[in-house]
Amino acid sequence: MKTRKQILITFEGGEGSGKTTQSKLLAIYLKQKGFDVLVLREPGGCPITEKIRNILLSPDNFKLTSLSELFLYEASRAQLTAEIILPALEAGKIVICDRFTDATIAYQGWGRKLPTAQIEMLNDLACYNLKPAITFYLDIDPQEGLKRAKGLADKPYGLAGDRIEAQNLTFHKNVRNGYLDLCKQYRQRIKQIAADKNIDEIQKIIQAYTDETLAQIEG
Ligand code: TMP
Image (cartoon, rainbow, N blue to C red; front, side):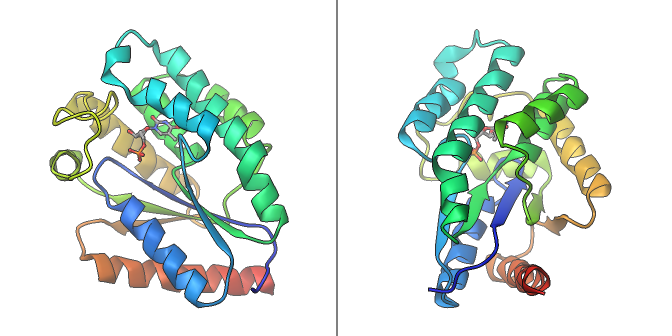
């Protein structure tokens, strides 16, 4: 197995953007190249945080306030980072995470209208200041994305979707604007890719950027 300096790769996007598929394909690509790769998701990724995920996504919890929601996402992140991500990076694995800190800025900051400056502080605290080496943002029109997401076979919460998917279109449009703003702020780190291309075409772009980033890190 090849080992590398600490490399965290994150995937972001609205509902139905295809980021989960793309993150798994990238893991296969990197494993074929001889890297030790760990794929995780947020919220979730280990037993404690999967329980937090259930609280966050269950439509039964419609009384959850925006602030409680924010702290639960950060709690999940703090646990996953300390228990799984940091030890994996330390062991030389490449960690691919399906969503990370940018999601909280987009969803809780732009979607729920909570103050982004304070969210940034909580993000840093929860992830021990860990920064992704590269982030792929798969951009999709929210109407199209929600249609795609609701048509997926694996629907644990039924056709209306989970508690976040079930938010109105304005919420999802605000989330997208949040992501687009982050792309502008962090042009170097975040690679914006239109999600309406076919799966292989998108994956090729992701692989090229990943190769470039790995080469830069290796020096
Ligand atoms: P997923 O559907 O990509 O697995 O993500 C779960 C949901 O949680 C998705 O609707 C986005 C949302 N989310 C936030 O609202 N804030 C966050 O910080 C994260 C990580 C996810």
